[in-house]
Image (cartoon, helix red, strand yellow):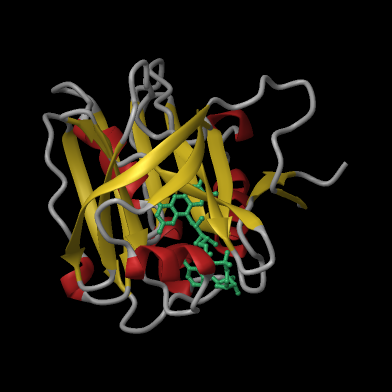
Length: 250
Ligand SMILES: Cc1cc2nc3c(=O)[nH]c(=O)nc-3n(C[C@H](O)[C@H](O)[C@H](O)COP(=O)(O)OP(=O)(O)OC[C@H]3O[C@@H](n4cnc5c(N)ncnc54)[C@H](O)[C@@H]3O)c2cc1C
């Protein structure tokens, strides 16, 4: 597997649209998830569920790029859920201190890893709490009859939340009982037990990079066509911001 940490827009892609996001509301949804609603001049803001924004956060050494998923857009506000991961990262600190009127620059929307592949007969999502906003955003918009499986890992049972919507959802929470770790055994082992239903499925595998790599490898070893796996590393120990593309070795 080749990891490609990426903090910049790939060459050849159009520049991301720039917005001024202004904090309009702050709420703790669960003990480690802080929801911030952003207002501002959002005329023309459009996104597809599962897309994210690049938030420009002051790192103390200049602005740093941090990806955050659009949980929803409602009443003219862009809602984003920040995981309080406990490592004191600049984005985590910014969210912890956020109050009405605070502003930042946001670039996007961008990304398609979690964006639904409508041609699939069933869909499987796996991820940790950083992926919960995106997974929930996609599932909640699906019509009745769509078959969805989701394995979502959280620290504690209080970190679970309801995911609404009309889809036929088979959701399993995996409670770690401690802080997030790389190569999460709980998630990897749960996925290994997944028995794919008949038909052509699509798997959306996101979260800590080495956990994602191992899940993807496991699915391929069990015969899943790699074209039907979308995978992205949302964080990994030591990395500051950015995201990891997950590819096979050349
Ligand atoms: C496409 C995409 C969408 C994302 N959506 C969301 C989202 O909706 N909500 C959300 O909370 N996060 C989301 N993330 C993850 C988020 O961007 C990272 O967790 C980011 O590193 C947080 O920035 P920071 O400034 O707090 O920490 P950084 O400065 O980036 O990192 C500081 C230290 O903290 C560690 N760290 C960072 N995040 C975590 C974590 N989750 N668990 C344990 N250790 C961590 C790093 O490895 C590093 O050692 C997304 C990432 C991607 C790529």
